[in-house]
Amino acid sequence: MGARLAGDGAVRISGVAGIREAGEGQITFLANPRYEEHVARTRASAIILHDDMAPVPIPSLRSPAPYVTFLEVLKLFSDAGAEQPEMGIHPTAVIEEGVDLGPFHRIGPFVVIGRGTRIGQRAVILAGCYIGPGCVIGEDCVFQPRVVVHHGTVVGDRVLVHAGAVLGADGFGQAPDGERYRKIPQIGHVLIEDDVEIGANSTIDRATIGVTRIGRGSRLDNLVMIAHNVEVGENTIICAQVGISGSTRVGRHVTLAGQAGVVGHIEIGDGARVGAQGGVTKSIPAGESYSGYPAQPHVRATRGYAALRQLPEALRRLHRAESRLRELEERLGGGGTTAGGHGTNDRKELETE
Image (cartoon, rainbow, N blue to C red; front, side, top):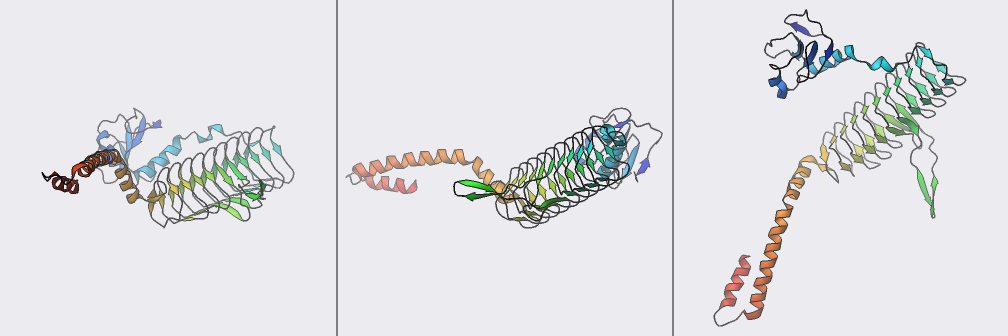
């Protein structure tokens, strides 16, 4: 793991767990100082800690990046290969003419691969996947069950596509023609660059013309919708149920939180962040944080939310003031110039209100 051992290393580790849940035989980690109080109480047999932390009573792996080290440990215990079929092609799979399959492939039951498609070495394609004609799939890709890849889609190396995702379906192009709509042919394609992960039941539409692109290293959660001609930059995070409309450009290292919605034909700058359920109607500059609907700078949005919480009390005060104002107006209108001079006093009271 590239870490430094502190304490007795003669400990058998059989699993991994969080610091509060870990038990004997498991290794845990601490990366967030908020959980430091749990170190003394953990039942784990070992722990991964930052280099600078004080000594602990159990063996520890010291690392400058404890969370990254923990991820590497997780790989040792991962069961990601449990679903993988045997090496080779399952007898129920349909491989059409002209398919170029790299060596060491694993093609599961009822997979269909269309003519002229090229797939790199060490591909894992699980049960029920469909890969259309003329696709290009890179090396070390994993397609989980029921993934659909339409014709002409290009996928880079080390791409993980979770179950039910659809790559390269037609973009939603409809042109009004009198009282009906005419479908606009979608003749572009989808390009997924290297080291991308696409969540379950997400959809990435092919371009009308040109390309819909997902940049290298980006991560898409489940149920994400990417429309035609969208371009997503490198190492961008798109959380569950986000929808991005056509021809929008999303920069590098952007974060779109859950259920954010983005209109078409705008740009979201590098490093920008959009909060959960944010409704983005205009372009966002690089490095900015936006939230709310319509999305606005996060600080301004939170002030607006704080003001909304005061609205019920403000309305009650307004109604009391209006009621008092009506009473004063009635008093002024009914006898505002009486000999006793009450009209003048009422007028002053009204001005005070």
